[in-house]
Length: 98
Image 1 (spheres, helix red, strand yellow):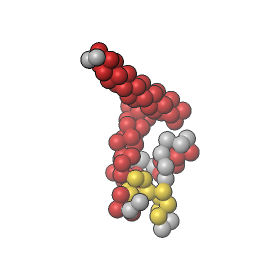
Image 2 (image 1 turned 135 degrees about the horizontal axis):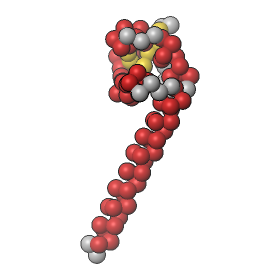
Image 3 (image 1 turned 120 degrees about the vertical axis):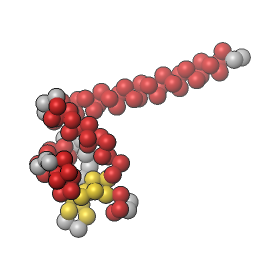
Image 4 (image 1 turned 180 degrees about the horizontal axis):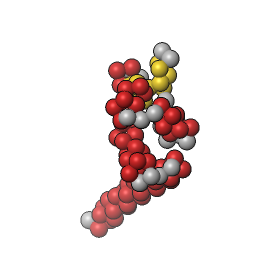
């Protein structure tokens, strides 16, 4: 993993106007993975969209970290079910074409 793909937590705290404790709590609940680079915690840039969702859930809906965890588990389950449905529909189309 290249360090150019990592965003330092202090930069995120400044950008989103949040305390470091928010990101530490997300990490404690297993919602994000903090990567230590030269004594600075960082987050991979691919996770920014998820982090922004978590911030909105926390600030706009006043969800606690357990609630955010539940919402993300449900969203992941929905994505899995969508994928399974598409696979099943594709199999069905193959049989219909016979």
